[in-house]
Image (cartoon, rainbow, N blue to C red):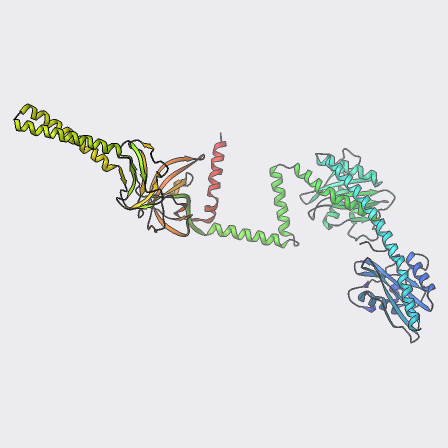
Length: 616
């Protein structure tokens, strides 16, 4: 919030609003206030004291900067000692409330009243009046309250004027930033900025320099497409820019009242009879360049400084981006290294040093210490033996008693094929067998040897057919070959469907013997060998890890564009909760390696292949 103008052009000692220090406001400190009638604050105090009856002296203090207050008016102005009024005003500022207290003599009373606008303290007024009844004092306080309206009006007028100036500065800064964005090259953008600012600020010359390798290099002069970079004139400007950049502050010569002073030796050399102003271009709190303004006759004001600083705050990042765009990879890397080195030595950035130290310690740790290197691979659990149960002959599904996932006992009925045709065929062959057998016996009784031999062959043939049919009837019942679990097969939706001989109906795996199939990436297969130990964690039993032994390395398989090797392993013990088909992640212990190798060997291998691929 903008404060009212003190209207005091003196070097009076400020009054602190934080700690009560009465001796800070001395007679010397407040005696230099403007003469009555020379400023609005002094005039207001004089009119106020003239309106009130019995006022012997008055003091007005207003805020000059944050929590710092200075005298703005004394009534009557002269050699009168008003130190006691300063002490009373200071107490009023600390308490932020009006008060009445004994005066310097027994015949006077001190009345103080704070000046607040929009809830913020802006000053205080202290009056010494002759002693009088309480009703008269209350009237004085009421008139003081009415008189504060002038300060509120003055404050809002000044704030409106300040807002207008800020908008004007912002408009100029945005115009310059937009102008800089129209150019690609740093030199072109800098020349356009310098020339436009030179015209708007009525300067004799404006120079823009960029920091490179801790030294300013001039890149543009207003209205000059070319200049001799090694001339004495350019060297003087660059020295002035270095002077401002080293101090990280705005430098003006001659000094500007209200601007923090700095060393301006180089600025004095180039100012001659005119005035010079240098503003640092910043990006992220870091100085990246300097813009120097020169005038031949008129001096720079605080308003000019604010405009130049607002413009510099916008064009600094733009010019730095254009400067970075001119660098190749090597140049940018060097720049980043220099920035990192500066950050390491910057006392304002201790966290960067802590982070760098931690990173260095971490790199040393992983380069020195070893850890167990394990090759990861996706894993699936299979039964060590998987028996296929197939259709013994062509037929139709009659019944299905078991589905995949169910456990079975040896000899348990899994399914049954339709046997109606076989029963009819058995009756046919049984009947034919009886007929041939009867004929055979009759021939034997008649001792008809030729007929006996013929009928004996027919009896044997019909007996063989009958045996075959009975065997088929026995095999219509599909039974489990051993105790285990049905891995595949569901005939519950296939009743009456035909099946061919040899068609797979079920797969049964034992529950006490498993093997693990690991799909090892081809980049890691060089480290895997039979006999190595490992561990597997299954998704369904993630809380339990199971040891395994690698038994065999099979051929490669392609999947989703990658080559994997099928590595077989055996579990050392199989918990009863295991089921074929369970998946998880297995890790094969290879041996100890450096931590840095474990985490970077994949990238190093990829980089080697990339280089080899690109080499002629």
